[in-house]
Amino acid sequence: MFPNRLPWRVTRRVEPVEPHFMTKLKQETKTADQAAEFDAFAGDYQDLHARNISISGEEPAYFAEYKVRVVDRLVGDEKIGSVVDFGSGVGASVPFFQQYLPDAKLTCLDVSEASLAQSRAVHGPGISFLHYDGDHIPLEDNAVDLVFAACVFHHIDADAHAGALANIKRILKPGGHFFLFEHNPLNPLTVRAVNTCEFDEDAVLIRAPRMYSRIREAGFSRLRRDYCVFFPAALSALRPMEQYLSWLPLGAQYFIWGRA
Ligand SMILES: C[S@@+](CC[C@H](N)C(=O)[O-])C[C@H]1O[C@@H](n2cnc3c(N)ncnc32)[C@H](O)[C@@H]1O
Image 1 (cartoon, rainbow, N blue to C red):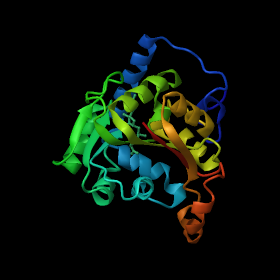
Image 2 (image 1 turned 60 degrees about the vertical axis):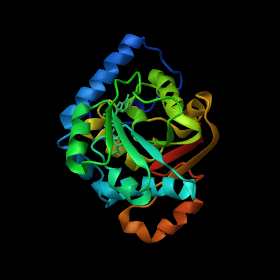
Image 3 (image 1 turned 180 degrees about the horizontal axis):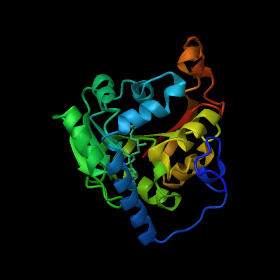
Image 4 (image 1 turned 90 degrees about the vertical axis):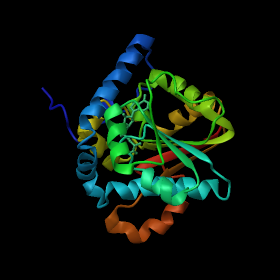
């Protein structure tokens, strides 16, 4: 009776208040589905993404750089020797890690082999590309200075978040940084973009307090949560104010920064 992709429909796309439980088998199936879905979109990902966010007046690179700039600002002078881009997709953040953290050894990790191949073709040598089966990250314990996950967890089933966070914590050095960026389901333009985006068909948006609790329960400490990305290009003159609005749950995105 109702069209499947109403732009303002929010209910099915935000996690329910009570979590539901799935078996490990279902989680593995979901990871395989995600890989297949992003494999199918890898060639068109950048174009689809650009079209989908055009209402912001910005290109995908604006958002990718924004996030890496936040990381760079917050880690300050600390030496970051290794970064894992968890759910790196086609590598939108790669040029910005190379620009802002040029000394860090970058590893792109994803469940989608086609996305990794696309990223490898564009960004070439000097970067490691790792396929992830959604269960075990093929890296040593305590090996990495910083893990970055941008718009990945809304593609992971809620029941698998704890496992994914444990995997991330395992590979981080003690005190290592974890930065997670996510869509804010309280921002109507974000919800509209997700509801009209082909590769977000299965996305389930996560409210910031819930993601914060999960990261804390996974054992991360010194947590910080900021809302961000408030103004479209048409209001870019107001962007210097964003630093004072991090408490306001209306930003298009939020980030959570924790330490292993
Ligand atoms: C919306 S894209 C974001 C890509 C990139 N982080 C960016 O900001 O452009 C989501 C990515 O998460 C990946 N993904 C989905 N499930 C995953 C999982 N369980 N573990 C790691 N990555 C996953 C997808 O294959 C896809 O490349």
